Image 1 (cartoon, helix red, strand yellow):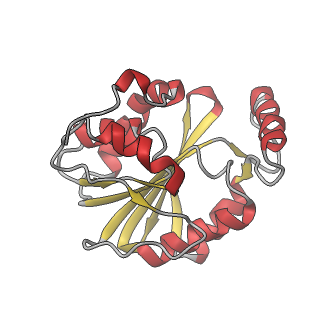
Image 2: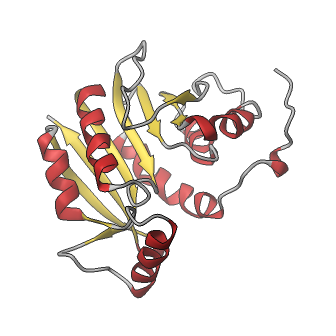
Image 3: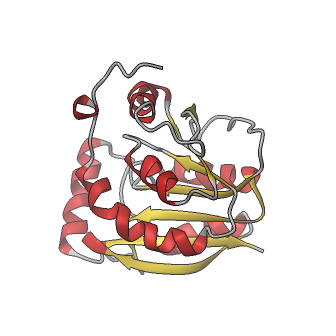
Length: 205
């Protein structure tokens, strides 16, 4: 398919460029035996094309809400990788699409603080229903600990988030781990990342 939109004209996230290398160092270890990854909220597509390029042993399935898919797909057209699928529509609050292959890993970055609490709960329920036995979930983003922000910049970011949408906000790690446990997912690693973010790795045994 001919590319109709030059890369330079597509939506671009500097944060994705800044964090993709350090995230990859952990995904290389965690996803070493993974075959099918479902990414929730692929956004600009910068993460999925980068990770698919470097994790050639697995198949990466991008997804997002309908209004993001055109730009996501436009970026994917610039990266004709055998292990990178076309983007699919996925709203965590609706029935998740039935995929041909079993999903043994789910990845999402910078999404849970944008979602409402209800949608965060729906995300984990969807993970529980979709993830194969012994699968894993990797989540990147900012989190609070014991109800406290980990930095002044995160506190300021939380104010900004709520100004954009009052139901958004940085989530407490204790609540997140509780939701995960309800789906049989245990927090195995919690890694400090640049810019006061975390990379959470949940496994299902």
